[in-house]
Image (tube, rainbow, N blue to C red; front, top):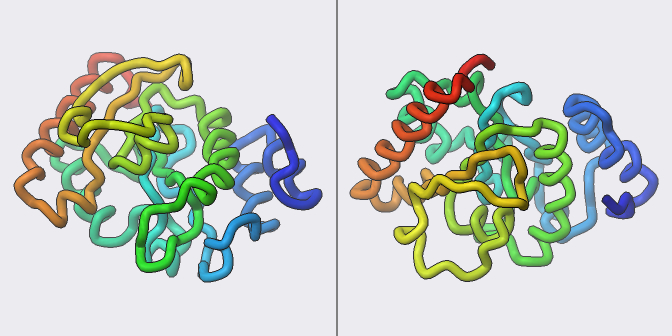
Amino acid sequence: MQLDLFDQSANAILGAKTYDEFRAALLKAGCTKCRLSQSRTHLVLDRGNPRAKVVLIGEGPGADEDAQGKAFVGRAGQLMDRLFRAVDLDTNRHCLILNVVKCRPPDNRPPAADEADTCMPFLKKQLDLVRPKVLVFLGATAVKYALGRKEIESMESVVGQMFTTPQYPGATCLIFYHPAFILRDPRKQPIFEQHVRALKDYLVREALLTA
């Protein structure tokens, strides 16, 4: 991995040996590599348990996340927490929640390709350090950038899929609707609930709920 994202701090950030080291180094250094840094309040690195077996990957911080410096704490995150709790999954205990970008895009727009590309080494480093057994991609932006599926016919055609990919060896991958989409279209909530139950069943079957 190239260590030239920004100034000499990149060595400490992308060369970190543990997740805690990575997190502390990035928060200390900050990042001004792309235009999203110009309007952020806080870098939003994550929420949850770095020792969990499940990583959820979303799009980017919103207003609440930018204010608090934590991922998925707004309405969409609260909805997701409730739906996970319904099957006895605690997102703060059983999951680590990340995003494609770590600064809030203006007006909650999707991150642009260059913004996602600039931030991607951070996400990849997080995944390298955590080594999740399950990766859940929340929404089209995560599928596009973190999974690399630039062209998909529709989210409806891919949600609920469970698969493996050489891109993330050792991990089982799933695609979910983004919970913000469920807020906009509550008719899709039963589908999201079905996918969460399938995730729980898989974790129980594979004995992955030890975090």
